[in-house]
Amino acid sequence: MSLSQLPFSPSCENNKAPILAVLKQSFKTTRRVLEIGSGTGQHAVFFASHLPHLTWCPSDQPQFIEPLEMRIALQGGDNIAPPVTLDVSAPWPLTPGEVDGIFSANTLHIMSEAMVVDFFKGVERHLSDTGHLCVYGPFNYHNQYTSESNRQFDIWLKHRNIHSGIRDIEWITELAKAAGLNLQADHEMPANNRLLHFMR
Figure 1 (tube, rainbow, N blue to C red):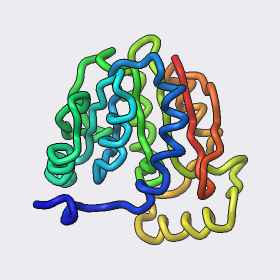
Figure 2: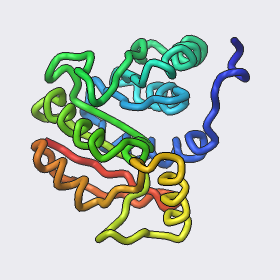
Figure 3: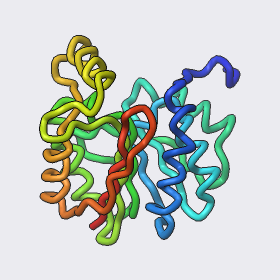
């Protein structure tokens, strides 16, 4: 399969540069980053190529692994690990403390609330004692949408899957705090998204 035949996300292409600008600071001392929900792999190959001081470890659910492997084979460099199958609600395929960075983009509003809880339980178990967590996507504040487009997006999400939906940042920070993580920064991003940086 050629590069042009692989799954492609326009939003990944549009947001990768703004996200990278934040990750260069958030992950500047990080050595091994687990990406949860790597999807098409566009973020993985781009971030790995621009963050040569660390190893980028992609992961996703089983149905996404084969095209993810193909993109990495075609575009990946020496500092990107083979992708692994990861379901946040099942045992994670790594040992506690193996990674000192975790990144996830546009996943928490796709997951059910129970899966979001499991996500943070996994972060608590596997992130190193001095690790960083960066989460990108849309969030509500005080149960209010930040834009009309986010409101419409939330309606679309719930129509597709009643368990999905844009999450309140207050709930996310509570889950993070219970996992031993404190919010370091809440970065405004294009298209009414945020990038939340948590640290042990």
